[in-house]
Image (cartoon, rainbow, N blue to C red; front, side, top):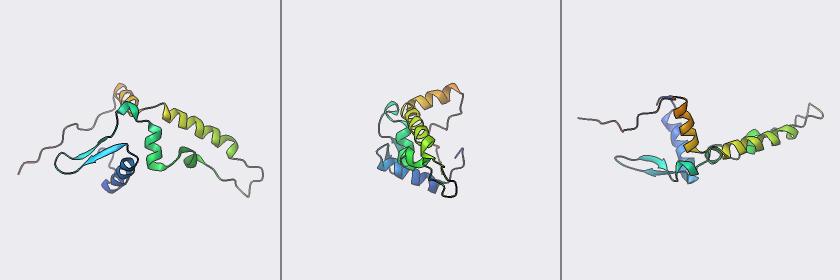
Amino acid sequence: ERQAIPARYLEQIFRRLRQAGLVASKRGPGGGYTLAREASDVTLREVLEAVEGPVADSLAMEPAPDLPGFRPDFLWEQLAERFSDALEATTVATLCLDAEQASVPRAETEAPMYFI
């Protein structure tokens, strides 16, 4: 809500996260999504790959036929590996601690109450 992300897009993301076993869902009152494992056991690489696919595929570049000798594989494979390593070394718990230290505002923690 804070970032104005459409609900349908979030549903797609959470469906992929659930399929990857990263979140569990609960229907009905008090329902929603929770992490399926401890936050310290979920890496950002797992999250990114559940939503976008393999990191190497996301960063892959095709050779350009109109540029003879252009070899994107020379650098991009190395960058993809380093990026993957950084994501693998960062857990959801680490990310939350870093956000707290940077004073990133948190979303409302309690479910809103509706009275009729």
